[in-house]
Image 1: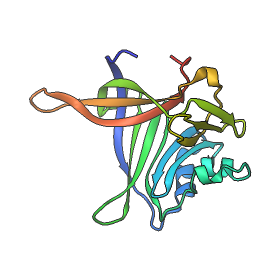
Image 2: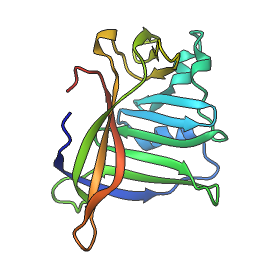
Image 3: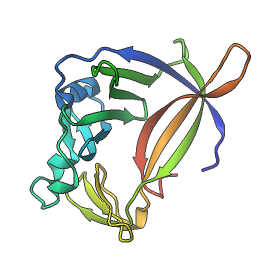
Image 4: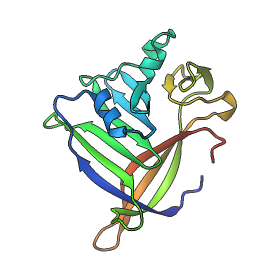
Length: 198
């Protein structure tokens, strides 16, 4: 994918996070009826997930009865570092403040032409994800492993070996300062896609 600046209309908004936090419940509530992917980093590993019809299923849940549960830890507040709930229309980023240890969150989402936008220019980028071998765990989760490195993760997507490598599409949002200097000031995740989803 050639890197080019394209027009967009997106808003950044800070959102409140309850204390104590049940991350699975809170993230599913934030998604509502939208279909969203989850990418979470925890002290004990990487957690993928997908929300459909208001229900969050994590990679740990999907692997529970397959013998691969050790590949992905459960989603727990005590070990969670960051979580990103995302789709084409926006992203919620949840993180723990390093000074206060309280949870913080921000949302970036697409708005229509009649609404004021924080960002009007962006660059999309596709990042390759580990995995050159696949094993379907369910209709919506696939174990990806790398034969050279031995790394494994369970992605919330059904993908065939012919569609590898799996890619994560990001959107880098551009802002100008008062002098007109433009730079990337925020980034968000957009979607997961195979190599045929150009």
